[in-house]
Amino acid sequence: MDDMRAREVLTAAGLPAGAELLALGENAVFGLGDLVVKVGRDSTHHPELRERAEREVAVALWLADSGVPAVRAAEPLARVVEGHPVTLWHRLADAVRPSEPRDLAPLLTQVHALPAPQGFTLPRRELLGGVERWLRLAGDAIDPADADYLRGRRDGFAKAAAALAPHLAPGPIHGDALPRNVHVGPDGPVLVDLETFSADLREHDLVVLALSRDRYGLPARAYDAFTEAYGWDVRAWEGCAVLRGARETASCAWVSQHAPANPKALAEFRRRVASLREDDPEVRWYPF
Image (tube, rainbow, N blue to C red; front, top):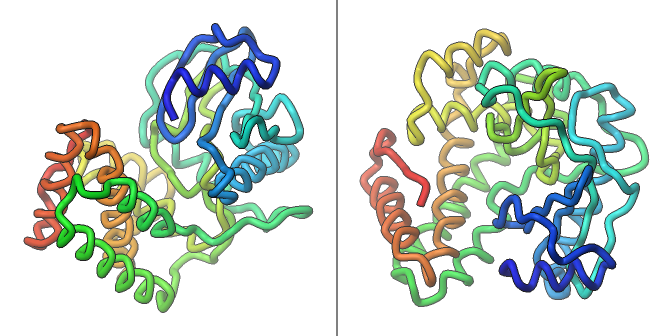
């Protein structure tokens, strides 16, 4: 999906095609006055994309009822327009500063204290569920041996993760707990990007920043501020390496889908796979 196609969907939904494009990734995100519109990829052959959008709206309503600071849905249901899920959100006030890991900790504490929602079911955190789709989108742009290597890692870590004994009580999680998914407005930090909400090991939410510390250049002092605010360091848990390995595998596969059209993505994909093959946990990974 590109900018042009997303604007065609806006028109079909009765919304102005001239809306401001805020982001283009898994979704096209547009600003429209006091609203934000998210246009998802075509779900005609991938119904899970429509289900994910529908669940994100349900999660937003549930968090509002639970008093958790988070982005609020402007409509109670997702639309499906020419096969694309479309959701409307209340636009947040401008950020007063960039978010930091310490802003994320109290929000996760609130989410991790919640019981399962009533009226809908959160799925398991299918961290590895997109690997096959991403590798297929990569096609011939990547070495087939690298694709097979990632498939083998996916299968191995999926089996290992299923056998883990958690330290924390399982339950609702954000699923992609990074500072970029926190918006610090005039009233304080709020959670955004709710589409990965799941019911699974709470440790999933904590491994994300542990990996960021090692792979993405998160300063140690920022990570320590997060663990101090949360009250526990997931690296002390023996299952940490398993969830980390699963997330690394998924991250590599996600990059691969961009390789056909982006030489920088291909180079980064190769860097990441090489670091996994060499079992070097400290090779820095970069955006592209």
